[in-house]
Amino acid sequence: MSAINNFIKSRKPGILPIIAFLFILVSANAFSQSKKWTYKECLEFALEHNLGIKQNELNNEITSYNLEKARANRLPNLNFSANHQFQFGGQVDPYTGVKSSDNNSSTNYSFSSNLTIFNGLQNVNTIKMYASEKKSNEYDIEKQKNDMMLNILRAYLQVLLDKEQVLSAESQLQNSEALVDRAQKLVASGTKPMNDLLQVKSQLATDKYSLAQAGNSLQLAKVSLMQFMELPVDSTFEISSPVIDDNLVLSAIMKSSRLVYDTALEVLPEIKSSATKIETSRYSYLYAKGAFFPQISLSGGLGTGYSSLRSLYNSNPIAQTTEIGYLASNPSEKVLADQIINQLTSKSYPYGSQLKDNISPSISIGINIPIFNRKQAKTNLSIAGVNLKNAELTLQATRNQLRKEVEQNSADMIAARNKYLAATEQVSSSKEAYKNAEAKYNLGMMNSTDLLTEKKNLTQAELNYIQAKYESLFQNKISDFYLGREIVLQ
Image 1 (cartoon, rainbow, N blue to C red):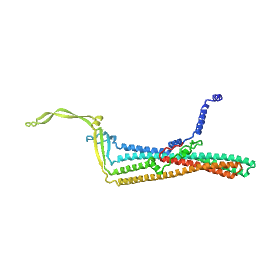
Image 2 (cartoon, helix red, strand yellow; image 1 turned 180 degrees about the horizontal axis):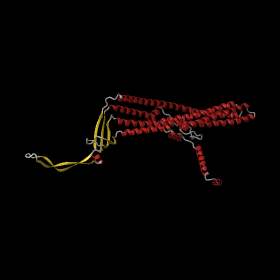
Image 3 (spheres, helix red, strand yellow; image 1 turned 90 degrees about the vertical axis):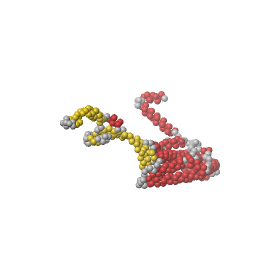
Image 4 (tube, rainbow, N blue to C red; image 1 turned 120 degrees about the vertical axis):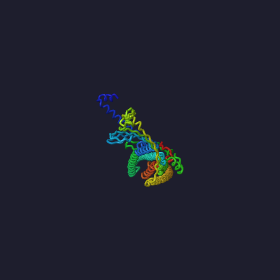
């Protein structure tokens, strides 16, 4: 430790970040090499990074916005508008109707609102249609996740299978190496001919080739699993190896395909999705039907404005002596009298006062009765009817496909279990046979040809056992999936 400290002290300050970086890099590499992925971790990583699932979730988010928009469409709208204009030359005041040759500057403000009272329940059916579509999309996403789960399960079990085949191949190779060593001693002692040694060496070469093949298959299986996970291929990738014994392989309770099918109808999202799509199509059909009904709407408005031509006038009474006639006896004599005359004076009409005085509210109710729309409504209704029938057929086709898959799984599950039990017995018998043959060979009572035949039989029996074990386990988990159970590998 003191040597390391002295080395660090003797270096320039810039060496410390480099050492720290190398330490982190080595630590991260050691962690990646020691980490072993469980099935649950593989599945969670795949679900989190799958682009198809993310895209469908975004598409469903759009449907949520459409639903929100459809709900808001039941509310009245409210709009505000304003404009200001300049007019030159002879103009007519929009408020007094008086023509003037002066230039005019005017401003108008208005609020307007519209509310649909009845439109054939199209707003209501639009809301229900988008709500149903949103639910259907959620079921589709759930099905996509289930498909990913099955892909990860299949790939994960394939890696486990190939790992066991590698271990079996290594065991067979070690056994062949021991046989070669034993044969060399027997040949050297004159107990066995040279041909026996050559045959055993040939078997050793075959076992090396089988081990290489098993290793290649294992690497390809890992690559396949990593690709399903959307994980960049890493040579250090490893998975944990759960204990898979008779208790796990034979723990599944055999149930009739009809019972499994009835349960699957209740739990699988593809069935729920197809049923919900029928609802969506039905609401779409009712929406199209609403186009044949009259539409009733209520409108309201509030407006005001300003014009520079307008003025405020005041009337001031003034006493004024004026001639009202002449004397009858003397027409040349004028008759004068005092009269009250209203004198008008004008002043500027303030902007705010005009806006207040010119307020004009309005309200109206209207009805629009469709008479002829170039067969658009009729055609849309016919298309919606076809889509509804197609959705009903899709549901039936989905049910039929599920029934076939469940029936196939039931048959495969029984066959895989029987194969596993037979393979278990075959391995046990082959081990005993090979053990007996090996003892005879060591005593010189059996030649290498017969011994290697028993060895090949044992190798094949072990491979059959491994494949049957994982096939039976996979079919059991598929049955659990149809029954709505969580898939767990212990």
